[in-house]
Length: 258
Image (cartoon, rainbow, N blue to C red):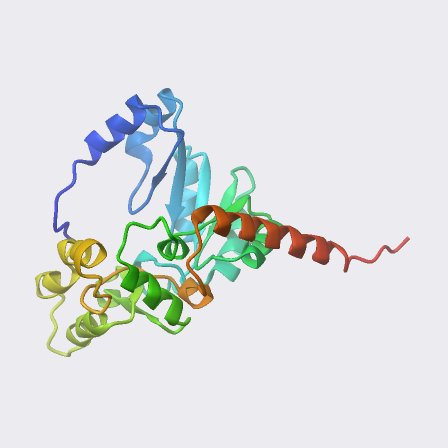
């Protein structure tokens, strides 16, 4: 899709390298252009891969970690046929890629999910949507409250007709986008959707109005696992503690054959 606000990614990469940021996540394109710059400054590169084919390309260019994303995540960039959940996508990636650490990404927000990912062979999980409903998140309280009230059916896919499937919160704006997209007269012209998908509109929602129904915003199915608004510290401690309990419990079902 065309960028509504052009970004100087070369300048961003230069600053990341010069400031020796510990790790950078690259998504939405090939990491090849920046690998030499980052590695020469000691920056580790995590590539967010929406599909296994993207992960294999990233591995070829020398990234340090691969983040495998399932379709239940707040994805962006999916094409027809890419509707693969993390349960399969992660297992497949671990089967094929054995020389780079793999991180699981896709609607994660609980210790049970962390335990499952570790048991499968991943080195950890990433979370995004879950952090919106924390005390520190710099967004309006009304949005946090809506996240707690929502369930796992509260998301939808937009831009699928443009081969750029993106999971967002199901609201008035998302439905309007879908109505335009799936109208038989729609010719694929993104300009007809741009006013509804504008980042400026979403920023106004986050910072000023708190009207969760009046902007398009990324949201994974993990919204159905959000039941409170803790501090980030408490959330992470709870996730780690619950993961430890589940891993210990799982180890208990192993029966010796000796």
